[in-house]
Length: 330
Image (cartoon, rainbow, N blue to C red):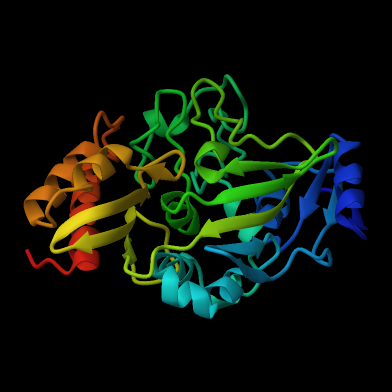
């Protein structure tokens, strides 16, 4: 077992200062992923864990037409919030589909945003070829067995999948992330927070060392909006998505005046399907329109033999969630 120093932070500034001053330090919150990677899989290293669980970063507050969600709020707390249930069904459904009750009671919203890929090759330290773990070493998933991997934003450098269900819904809603750092706080749209792997799959987001997510701001949907989240998986519970989709629509006399669509299970990052949204907005809510949007969403995929099935499955997932949310029967 690797050795490390454990420190409990007393305030946000102190936590940021301790981690930013030590290249080997990292933050510890719910630990549902971080401790697995550090202690069980041993694919990351940390000489100091700075515990932030007692910092005042909990809670859900409505401010105008958005929710301010503290980074240490648990998945279960957010799923149980009455405003989320009423105005953001896609968020609630994504949270409930994302983990068991036990994990949701431990896992934090900030931690969910930062969870690492479930790629079997990244999590197996005996596999040498993983550009995400060892830059320049190659991508074993491209050459070997792949299934739970990405087809959008992928390349020969990396096809590791972003596994979060919640982030799919949050990207569709234009959520933003507040970040505290050693210099100054900043706010980053979640859609700009994640980085495509390119030739540096090891750099996953815009966070600098020592920066800490303190809050997520989630815009509320209009009261007339309909929304939902659909997750296609191998078994009914406690399983990661083969494909998923979060959708929100506002309809006026059968015409979609507003459309939001994001995809999971297919992207190296939570995938906003803007080309599909352009087709949906202003169009009649029909199966023909939904199929055209699905074709636009899954364009130019990067597939290997084990992931080619996701192209058609993702399209069907998109059509199904749009039918469900709009109430249109096939």
